[in-house]
Length: 230
Image 1 (cartoon, rainbow, N blue to C red):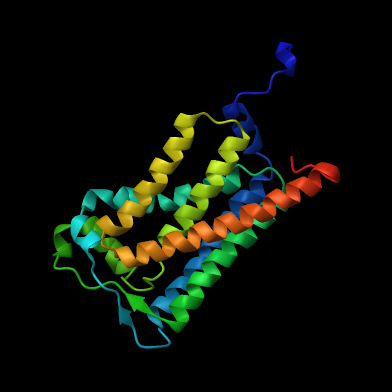
Image 2: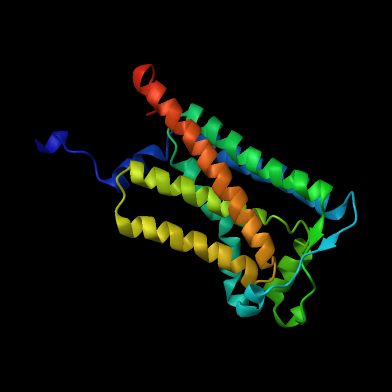
């Protein structure tokens, strides 16, 4: 095999894909997050039915409150932006957006018909201004399923798939899952969610990602004959 015929290193393939449809990626992601937050906060402040307080379980007692987990919690908004940045075509971007939208709509529908909240913790939030600010902005409602966890898992599965497609090494695949697990951990460590919410978000995110990737695989098989994905 000649040097020119060798496949590019995984990181060069990833960097080459990022600029493609960059205005759509940047504007679309920003608009998407804005619309999502509008719907999320509306349901948070205007529950249609009585609010159910979620139970505190042994796992919540095992994972204590940790204010240093706050950066991991906030990093979700960077994390969810990575998979769409690594998609090359508009068709891929639209399909990804549809799948992510279905995930969010499923959770928002549950929030509407079954409003839930995290039990109040015996913590003086004034001692932790960073987490206290988060609590003032995002009250502990819309708890089950944890959409924070669902979108993290959805993004983690997709990012794993894309990194493998680029031929990413094991260490970068592990780094992806460490980041994802860190975000999941942060939802409990910041007391934004309880374990029951986490499990619900994990199931929702994994199911949505697997279904959307199955559909993607089917499209790629057809695309191999008609029109390549990339």
